[in-house]
Image (cartoon, rainbow, N blue to C red; front, side):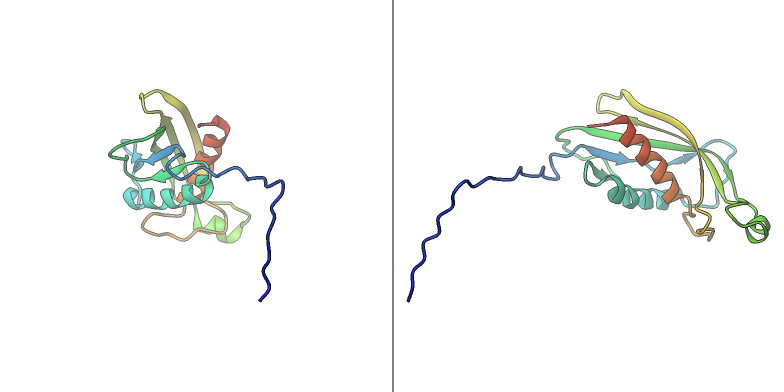
Amino acid sequence: MRKCLLLVVGLTLAPIALSSQDKPVIVVQAFTAAAGVELPYDLKLMQTQLVAEFKVMLGKEFNIVAEAPTTPQGTVYTLDGEITGWRPGNAAKRLIAGFGAGREASDIQYGVTDGSGKKVLERKDTVRTNFYSQGAGSSGTLAHPIAQKIADGIKKAKLK
């Protein structure tokens, strides 16, 4: 039997990635609808979809949750949003004109607050469904484009 001796010279350790406990937390609250805005969607279900979307879009930098941690450790942000307007779009325009005409649209306002209650991000946007996703469901097709708008805003705000 042959014996080998392994000699390691100049070993460099790569930086250790932050554990999920070291990342800031974003608590995604269920969106609300402004007075007079009637939506055909379940906003609690939309919250679940938004959490899933944000985990994909922001999961490397943040822990995304639907409920505030009972014993917060580190930085905790809270995302609140309100749908201030909604337009169902026009199926005839979508069919005849195409190219995104007649898409469902929503006006939203949202904000992110830090643990002390200070607003660190506040925006208003209009969000339209992707032209290829016009189907209806219990939470609609707006969750993905809403998540994209908000994720872009969070990235630009450079929250940490």
